[in-house]
Amino acid sequence: MTSPKISYASEVDKVCKALEAVSLKSSEILDHTSLQIQICNEGRQTALTEILEILTVVCETHKLPLAQTWVPCMHRNVLAYGGGLKKSCTSFDGSCMEQVCMSTTDAAFYIVDAPMWHFREACVEHHLQKGQGVAGRAFLSRNACFYRDITQFCKTDYPLVHYARMFKLTSCFAICLQSTHTGNDDYILEFFLPPSITDSYEQRTLLGSLLAIIKNHFQSLKVASGIILEEEGLVEMVQASTNKGLDSRLECIRIPR
Image 1 (cartoon, rainbow, N blue to C red):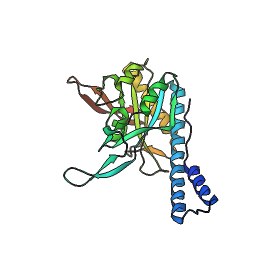
Image 2: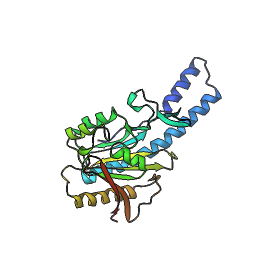
Image 3: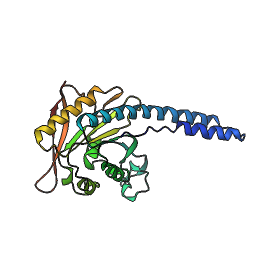
Image 4: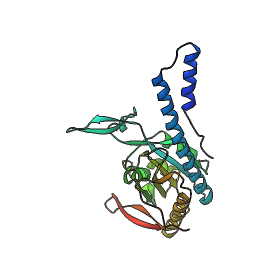
C-alpha cells in the first residue's frame, strides 16, 4: 500500500481567498511568500513522488516488508557551549533538544506486510537523531549503510530497537539522497529486508539489486555525498563488536546491469 501525496500550496491559496472575501486583501509580501511556499512544495512533492516510485518497485520486486523515507526536522540556530551557533530541532520533544533530528514523511513509504503498519506507527511517533539506527548513520555519512541485524543495536544507538525485535525485523539498508528540485535537502530511504534472507552472500546480492533499481530510477535524485552509482556502490557495513559497541567498514557492492 502506498502513501498519499501532500501539498500545502492549495491551503495557502484558500486562506488568501477567504481574506479577500471579507475585504482583507493579502499583502504583496504574503503573495510572494505564498509563491515561495508553492514552489518549495511543488519541488518537494516531485522529489517525493520519484522516491515513492523507487520504494514501490523495490518492495514489489523483492517482497520487502516495509520501506520508508526520513527527512530532517525543522531546526533553529542556537548558541553553542563555548560560543558559536549550532543547529537544534524545533520539536517539543525534550529528547531532541540541541540535536539534529529526522522524522518519517507520510508522502513516501510502502508497506507490503500488514503487521508492519504498527511498526510504521511507532516510527512516526519517534524522531531519530543523526547517527541513530541505520537511517541515522546514512544521514550522518550522506551515503549508504547496511546492518544485517538491527536487533543488536542498544536503545541509545537505535531508540526503535524494541519495536524491531517485536516485529522480527533484522536486516536494514538505508541511503541518503538529494534532488535537483530541492537543492541541499536530504532524503533518507530506509529498506527492511525480508527476515528470511539471513545468508551474507544473499544479502549482498540483494543490496546490489536494490542499488540497481535506485540507480535506474534516478531522474532528479542523486546520492547526497556525490558518489556516482556505476558498476559498484560504496556501502558502510555495520556489525556488533565484541565489546558491545559497533564496528563498521566500507565495502563495494557490485551493481548488476
